[in-house]
Amino acid sequence: MVEPTESETLEELDRFINAMIAIREEIAKVQSGEWPQDNNPLKNAPHTAAALLESEWTRPYTRGLRPFCT
Image 1 (cartoon, helix red, strand yellow):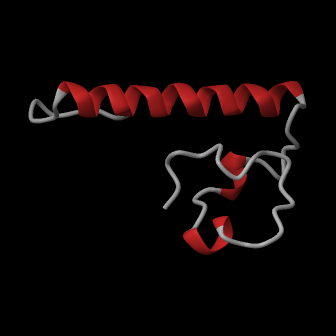
Image 2: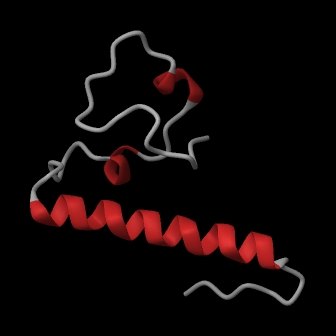
C-alpha cells in the first residue's frame, strides 16, 4: 500500500498516478498475451542506462516505452 504524505505536490501526485496507470496497462498486455510473461517491461525493470544504450534491442517492446527508466 502506498500512501503519499501531505508534503507531496499535486504535480508529483499526478506523476505517481500516471506511472501506476502505465504499469497497469503493461500488466494488461502481459495478461492478453501481447507481451510474453518472461520478457516484458515489468519483468525486465528497472532498465539501466547501459541496457537502453545497447546497439541491438531484442525485447518485444520499444526502447522508448519506459519513461521511468533508471
